[in-house]
Length: 171
Image: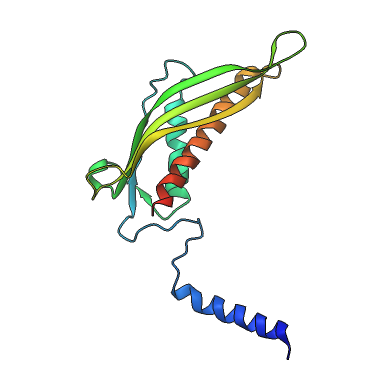
């Protein structure tokens, strides 16, 4: 008896039979059928520091994750959306991360904290409401302004990815 053919046939049969039983999305998410739109407003920057366009950068990162990488479409207002996410940027910290031999910082770390909630329009209370943090380092010796901007963007990407993952893990 040829066991490798038997195993191969079993795997092929399983793969043919399973698609009807499992709902799969190529983005790795399983979104309820009645959820097709999401409202993502600008998160106010209450950090009293940092870069001037943090709110805009976070908004773009969230839209990219929720809209461009799932089947959801963006709603123009909360009232017409099936789901919504909102919150505020609470803190922006830029501090030395690594000190060189000359007692000056070689690397700085950007740490951003955002308080957010995610809710279905049909529900009375949020699915979750919590803080998310992201951080990244940059070389202060090499173009510190661009380095800070890139590190802040990386931290916001981490935050938007975590928000998306927490939202879809409950679906």
